[in-house]
Structure formats: structure tokens, C-alpha cells
Image (spheres, rainbow, N blue to C red):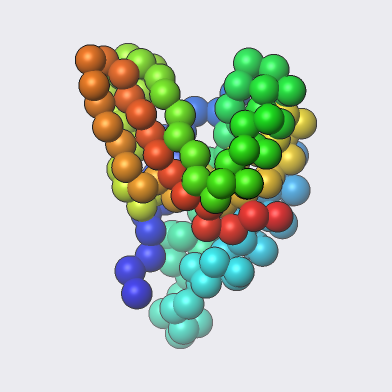
Length: 133
């Protein structure tokens, strides 16, 4: 089974203060439950096991972020829209993982990019929930 890529530069974080210890604990659980650490230990740690994916929150306010997370968790999927310029030429790729946080910076879901569409300078990034807390 091919493991999804981790591209730390693919997702920008918001102004939310993230608790790095809480992210590490979430990543350890998510990696286990999503079966992302399936390689036998004699191969040594993979990049996916060593480097947690980027964490991000969506919305201009904590309330917007919380509402977005609630909708994503209810649907199991989600999408974001941004201008192509906001990606600075580095569009995300399908298979890239990231950690979706709520408005308080608490990690709530491990998500994987499923599709990226660019139309008239707008980027629509679709993703699915791989694991939720």
C-alpha cells in the first residue's frame, strides 16, 4: 500500500496558536488509527512517521473555524477556496496530508487532499477525513 505524501509547505497555518505537544499526541494517534505506520520497524522510520504534517485552521474567527470543522467532521469531506496567488506557485497535490484544527488550535482531523482544481485564478482544494479525534 502506497503511503500518502507529506508536504509541509502545502498548507498555510492561520494566526491560531498551536500546541505542539497536543499536535504530536494527535499525530501519533492519527498515524496509528489511519494505519500510516504499517512498514515493519526493520526499515527504520519513514518521513511520514518522523515529520508530522502541517496544522491549519480555516476561517477568520475561532467561531468560523469551529463551524467549518463541525461541517467537515459531519460530512467526512470538505473543500477550501483561495486565490492562486495565495499558494505562491506551490499548489497542493492529491495525497498530501494535513491536520485540521478548530478555532482554539485543537487538532480535530487528519485530512488528505483528494482534488485540486484551478479556475479563473481560484483554487478549490478538496479533501477527505482520514482520522478524526
